[in-house]
Image 1 (tube, helix red, strand yellow):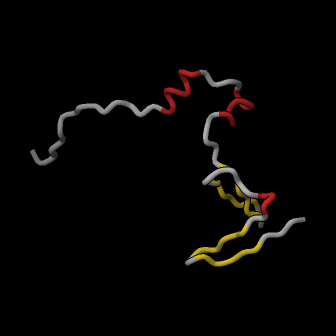
Image 2 (cartoon, rainbow, N blue to C red):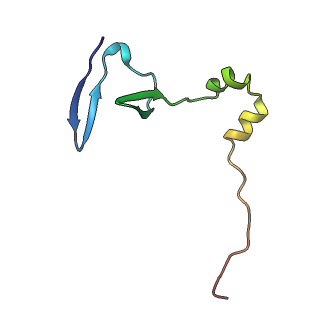
Image 3 (cartoon, rainbow, N blue to C red):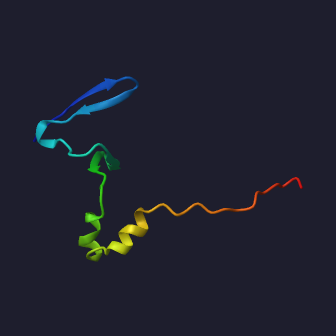
Length: 80
């Protein structure tokens, strides 16, 4: 079983991962499961969804990643 060193960095605690455990991403999810701490890469695309529901079509991906257009709305002045 591999081990990793724990050290302090500023006010935080950090773990130096062995080379074989490095992530190919800049962000990970962290969660506890009992006494264990689990790190998982944050998905950067929709590939994780395919095994669960099948392929995602282009319309779905476009709708999920496109910002809605700004709407013009009248101002709200609660003191009028």
